Image (cartoon, rainbow, N blue to C red; front, top):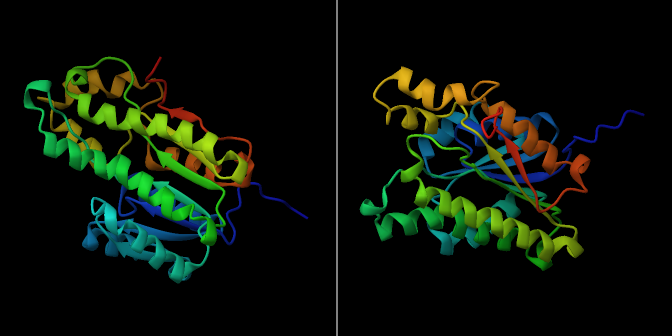
Length: 255
């Protein structure tokens, strides 16, 4: 009998930010490994297009803006009613902000914080509800910007919400260890996703972007599959002894 420790067979997993990039790649791989995926994104049109790429029998799309944090329990209840017990959560949804301190906007920061951090707490709380839980692997994808580059001084808002998530994951991993629920982060370098296109637009030309970003990745820029492979590893039983950690996937950028 062949045993695949990476199998996600029969597991129902929520993926946010599932309409593109890392979230979409992760959704594909979950299905390929035998799991079922609830694809969440606020862009209904992009989500509909993305879902058409997926196997119909193992995926469903849920259009939802995670900044409506008080409605997240209703979203999870709806997903649970459609799928049954939730076996994992991958929170890929996020946005990017480049702002020097002089341009700090409290409202913009609250929106960024709600999307990344408050939504993560509300999703995790709903998934880990004791009466309806059969989950052992809550997971957050977090981008870690390492080193120094031309835009470092403008990343204080973005970096602070990611720092909050890394700290939260460590504490939650300790809090839920006795319940066999795992929390982990993945911290990618720059990956070829629509967000990277927005970063390229901040540079005066492609040569400047390559010098500041591309060439600092010793193994080249990442692809969404490079990250989704590690995400699904952490979701699987192969990672049953891993919790509270942040896995750096950056092609050597942090060196």
